[in-house]
Structure formats: C-alpha cells, structure tokens
Length: 201
Length: 133
Ligand SMILES: Nc1nc2c(ncn2[C@@H]2O[C@H](COP(=O)(O)OP(=O)(O)O)[C@@H](O)[C@H]2O)c(=O)[nH]1
Ligand SMILES: [Mg+2]
Image (tube, rainbow over all chains, first blue to last red):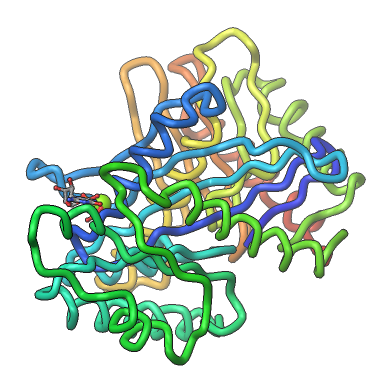
C-alpha cells in the first residue's frame, strides 16, 4: 500500500511487474533503468540465480517529480516468474498499488500467460485484493519477434484470452527494443495516481 | 494508500534519534511490510546506505524468514540478526504492519541493543495506533 509521508512530503508507490517466467519483466526494468538513468539515483537491485533468472525480485526506484507538493517516488518490482516460486511472488505482491502484467506473445506461451494471470488473481484474492479494483495494465511483449517470422498470438487473441473480463488498458510491446515500455509504465502510474487522488488529494 | 500524522512521525523520529542513534546505533530505519520507508536516521559518520533499496530488501527478507517460520511450525521469528565484521543488522517486528531495523558496530553489545530496541518497539506500538486515509 502506498505510503504518504506528510513530514517529508513524499508518496511511495509500489508497482509490480507480474507475468510468466521469461516473459520480459526484468527486461522492462532494465530498459527503464537505462532510459531514465538521470532520474534514478541508485543501482537496480536484482536477486538472481546463477542462471540469471529472477530468484526473488528486481527493485528499481524512480522519482517522477511532484504532485501537489509531494515528491512521488515510484518503486518498481518484478516477481520471479518460474512456476515453483509462487510463495515468493506472494511476498513481492504485499502492499502493491499498481500492476503491469507482462504476457509473452509467442504462440507456445498462450496457456502459460493465462495460468499466470489466473494465479495473479488468486494471489491477490488471498490478500483480500480484488483484481477489478487494483490499477492494472497488460503488456503483450516480444512484438519485435514478428519481424523475425516467429509465430505470435495476434492482438485480438491476446485480448480475448487475457482481457475480456478485465477490460483494462493493454499494449503490444517489446522490452528489448523499448517499444511501448515507457507507455506501459506511464499508463500504470497514471491509473495508480488516479486511484490515489480519489483517496487522498 | 495510507499515512500517519505529522505528530506521529515526529514522535517516531525523536525515538530513533534519542533512543537509538543517541546510544551509538549507526542507523535506524522503520519500514512497512510492503518495503516503504516510514522513518530513517543515521549518525552521519558511517557509510550512507541506499535506504529505499535497503527497505525493499529488508521487507522481503523479513517476509521470507516469516514464511520459513511457518514451514517449521512457528508463528514467526520475531527478530533476526545478521553479524558482520564491523557492521551488524538487527531486524525486529513492531506489529503486523511495520519493522524496526538497526545497523550497529562492534562497540555495542547485542544484549544492550536488544534492550534498547525492545523499549523503542513498545513506544512505537503505542504511537502507531491509528493510520489515515
Ligand atoms: N525478442 C524479445 N526478447 C525479449 C523481450 N523481452 C525479453 N526478452 C528476452 O526474454 C528472456 C527473458 O526475459 P526476462 O526479462 O528475464 O524475463 P522475466 O522472467 O519475465 O523477468 C531474455 O532472454 C530476454 O532477452 C522482447 O521484447 N523481445
Ligand atoms: Mg525476471
């Protein structure tokens, strides 16, 4: 849950990137880290296995400036995607304010995307959070692979699979090239800020 | 989203400064279980840490050890301690929302530190009675 510090005049917001293993969550944060170097004062924290897979989480704090005199500090996290790490995913979801679900557009990832989203819903429900009430953006990642002739799920199929009940903002993206990475994040931040303003400002 | 009042923040700051930094603790941080920094103070002499990253890791670490406690049939391990060559870290749970973390050197005994943190925790508990929004 976001923390408002009236003394330091800052608001801390937690946005979590969730999705199937190897979908591109860490790569999203890497891109943001490079793109906004000047606004990110610290190194990205990544807890990885030897095989370079996310073991616990990645953490990247980004300052986005002031709203109504409050410094807005966005804290980006990724969860580990591998199926066996659900206990860890639950820990990272604690106190989440906004979510980006990174789906892998490759045809063979279709079921894995659905399963990951289903499990995200369950994990939120276990924390008494309703997926319909939490700011959420979907990213259909790896769109760049289309040009290499790799079969991808088309936008309509992904929408049908993942977004027909939710009806949230969704973007094709490529975390490797940066296509729509910032757009995805900005949307997640603005949805989160809207839900905050309702509560606070 | 939630917050506490200016008065509550002032009281917590004053506790950290007087009861912990004042007795030789290098750094004292209150974080919530989501990894947000609520309050932090240091003595200005030791290495400054990146407090937001530290808080994210501390909350994650605490949650992980809590989950381990449940696996071995404990409710919780209410405090954790990591000993370094010159700096050590002590984590303790204040209530279900927040943790107190202290970083201290070899000049302070663990017994003394525990005594101090226990006192501070009781006081923070009595300050943390309401949250806002
Ligand atoms: N072609 C392509 N590869 C990607 C993209 N995003 C991530 N990858 C690759 O997919 C693999 C897994 O990415 P990673 O960010 O570690 O996935 P995570 O498990 O969701 O954190 C890596 O080899 C990335 O380079 C993308 O947009 N396009
Ligand atoms: Mg990863």
